[in-house]
Amino acid sequence: MNDQFGNRWPEGFVEKRRAREIKKEQILVRSGDPIRRFAQLSLLLSGLRAKGRRNALNLQLEHNTFNLSHWPNELDGFKILQLSDLHIPETRDEELISGIEQLASSTPHDLAVLTGDYRDRSFGPDAVALQGLARLRDALADNAVVILGNHDSIDSVSAMEAMGYQVLVNETLTIRHNGSAFDVLGIDDPSYYKQHDIQRCIELGSEPYRILLSHSPNTYQQAAELGIEVLLCGHTHGGQLCLPGGYPVKRNADVSVDLVRGRWDANGVQGYTNRGAGTSIIDARFHCPPELTLHQLATRSV
Image (cartoon, rainbow, N blue to C red; front, top):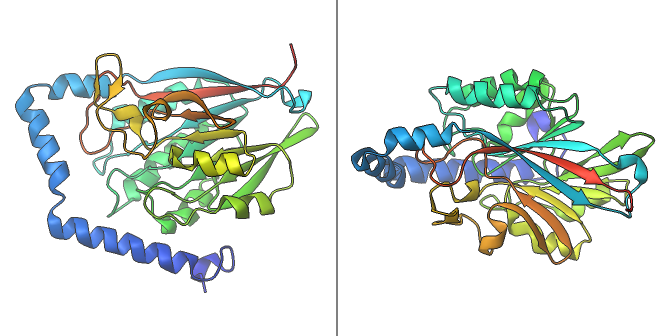
C-alpha cells in the first residue's frame, strides 16, 4: 500500500525508498556530515570564499541542438528548457532563486524539465526548497516536468504536483505539438536510490520518439540498449570545482569525463549533462559556471 499515492507505483516501491531515505539521514546525522564541514572550512581558510560565491551566481544560458532528422517534421524547432541541481539552501538563497527566475522567464520555451536535486542537503526539511520551486513555477512553460534526484524525498511529490508540476517517477508523459507527439520518460534517481525503471517508462508510453530524463548520466548504456536516443541529466555539477579549462577534479558519477558536462554522444544516445544552477557541499564554483540549458529539436533534413 502506497498510502496517499494509491497504486501509482508497484507494491513496496515507496516503502523501500523511504527506508533508504531514513538510513541515509541516520548515517549523516550520526557522523556529523564531516565532508561538508571540512570542505566549508577549507574554502573559508583559503580566502577564496567570496570569489567562489560570485562564480556560483554567474548563471549562464547554454544552447544545444539535438539532430533528429527521422523524427516528425512537426517537432522541428521544439524548445526544451532544462534546470537541474538547484540545491536551494535551507536559509533560502534569494540571489540564486531570483537569477534562475529571471533567466527562465526571459527564455521562450515549449517545455521545461527539471532533472533533480532541489533540496540542499540530502536529508532534513525541504520546505524552503519547495517554496523556491513554487516561486519558479510561473517562470516556466505550462508543461513543466520534474524528476527526483538523490537529494529529493518521495514525499515531496504531492507538494510539487500541487504547484502544477508534472512529477515523473518511473513514469511517462506524452507531449503533443503541432499534430505530432513524443514521450518524456522520467525515472527515479539512479545514483543512490537505484529504483529507476526505464523499461516501465517505455511500457507506459505511446510514442516511438522518446526523451529520457535521468538525474545522473550513468544510465546512458541502458538507454542505448533500449533504443532511447536523447538523454537529459545532471547530478555531476560539471565538476563544480574544476581546474583551469574546466577539467573536473571530481566526476560524481561512474562515467567517462566526456559525459560529466555539456553535450555528448555515446552508443547512439545524444545526451546532455547540465552543470546545474546551484552548488552542493560548498557554495562555490571554479572554472565551471552554473547553467540553464535551452535544447532545440532539429527534425527536418537539410
